[in-house]
Image 1 (cartoon, one colour):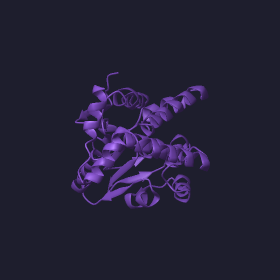
Image 2 (image 1 turned 120 degrees about the vertical axis):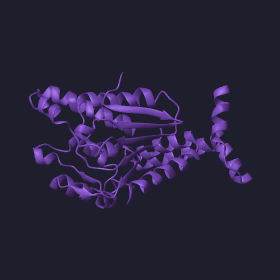
Image 3 (image 1 turned 30 degrees about the vertical axis):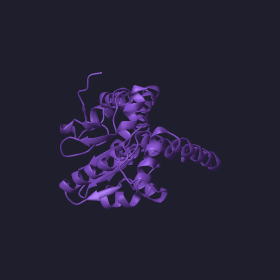
Image 4 (image 1 turned 135 degrees about the horizontal axis):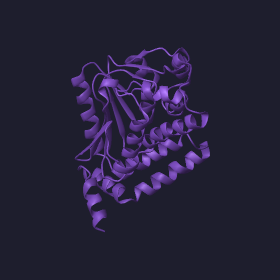
Length: 269
């Protein structure tokens, strides 16, 4: 698939996906949704990498739904609207299921479906002047599809407040609610924080991170006893894995672990 609404680059193991409709504040339409889904399900999944960074071009991160797209869906049947909603959910799910850390860098407004994209990410960094909102109720609909992913991050009381008032809220409020993980006072500090996080990720074992993401996901999907069993099985598996053995040996030898060497040896085997 050729992309016209997003830009996807892979720079030394860091995939950067830029929402690229700046004149429309990067609002979603069906084509953009399909492109983001394809990027995660096919391109990113099919290439080696350590992390994914999502950005927005121009003044906003994402303004939610494109008006022309929403106008078209207003005239569509219930069945057509259901199929469209399922495509939106598929996009969020593709981001949510990515096997490596997904980091959103938010410098401007993010409302509606844009906040659902943040709910699908692992880490959200925000500029202090960024604004957020679950504004669907203002146009007579519900933040239905995005709520599945927002519930993974935001405490229930805050989610109820913001969804039922449909009001805009600040980066500080987003941090307090759990939607955002870090807020920076300057754009330069925002980029520095991103680089610090990427540097930290490069010091970790990629298999360990992927399995940790999987474990964290099932904390919301399984019973308490199932979560206990999965956690104990995972740590036992990783302790005897090539990555785990290298990491433990490096720790005991007081040296930096070489997970890249482990990967190369695995590829040669």
